[in-house]
Length: 178
Image (cartoon, rainbow, N blue to C red; front, side, top):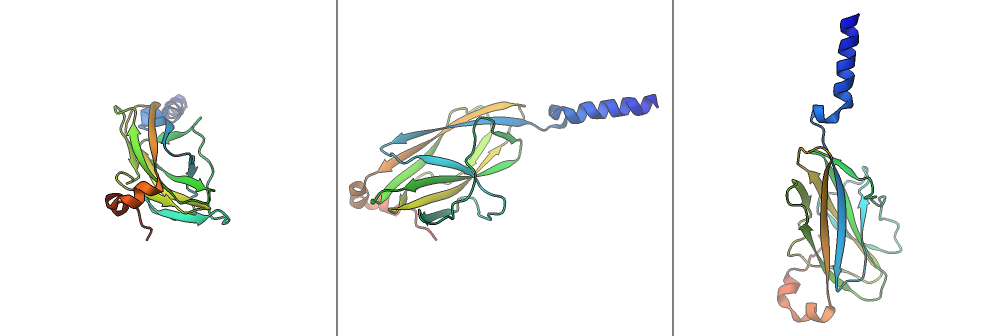
């Protein structure tokens, strides 16, 4: 009976202490920096029933009710080691003009092993008037530090229509939906 109580006590301690089991978590914070771009970048959780691959990019009319997902609260966002979170990046263009932009990831905390699968570098996007742009991005935490704090920032850079029209190089880099 004493052995059973001791066994129960040890198991309770082990399972109540995630660090002993190798389960680690990271607190994530994201900052978005805008350059020549006024439309906000929103971060939504990709619903479990929405089957989209990483880097899936879509355009929706603002009249459609197709954009799904809850806004991500960065106040208490935690990500477990070797787990991933698919995030839906969303930008709405309510204007009557086509908008061009690029997104680049600039990691602030390079000591942590954190992977962002976006494939956004050297790619330019456009959003037609009265529509929304979405892209699925995967965030993965690879470090073993318990309660690590990870902060990074995305930079959204706008490109005006005249520059896009005059530059064949930029036009080549413009993402074309499939």
